[in-house]
Length: 68
Image (cartoon, one colour):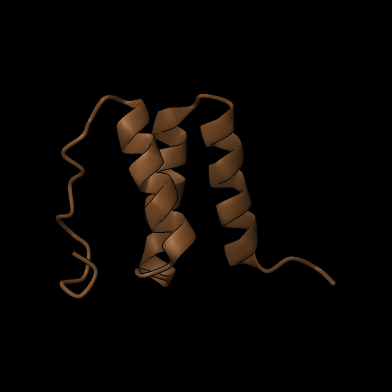
């Protein structure tokens, strides 16, 4: 079974994150959020990314109100 584009996008974001390419990972995670704004793994990984950058005030602007 071939992967769907959304799955490929998430996999690429995770790969970038693990490689330490934080800007690229952030961009890919946020692009994935456009398609799935409440996806738990994406939100979790964005949180991990923010913490790894030292940002403990995770910015929630731009997320749907029911996610905040």
